[in-house]
Image (cartoon, rainbow, N blue to C red; front, side, top):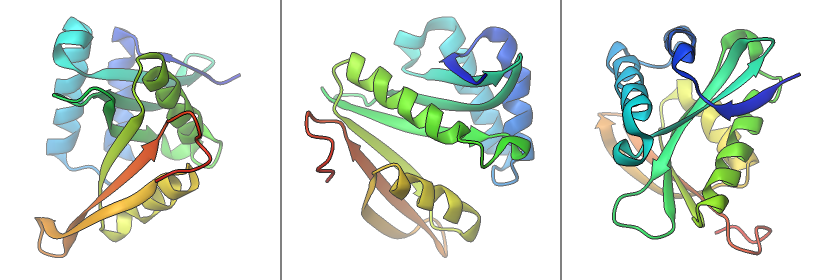
Length: 165
């Protein structure tokens, strides 16, 4: 049975392996996952980073990294949702996304902001966010690199979730 819960220190190596093997993150991005996880382990409140792991029978199937957006009252940033290549299509990312929504609500937050790339290898991620009720609100051309736009999605968590946007 799949469960989503706060990540444990011993999850790090599996999380980094998933980050490397999914095939879309650069070495620098994988190093950033490691850095943010270290901040989470030392003090999640001070670092502003939270990690959730989706596990089944002790194996990490995916993870999410999120945190409150500095200088805002109700916004969180969703930095990553990443699913092991062998677990894709099993609802792992959706479980993680719903868990992030639940944690955000519990913290009194009402808006999730997600930055992602326009590159072809991120097309599945963009479709996923739309499927989860997110709305593409901004696209900035050549933000990450020439031909690599920034796509900003939002997901409102207000009382009436049926009206998103």
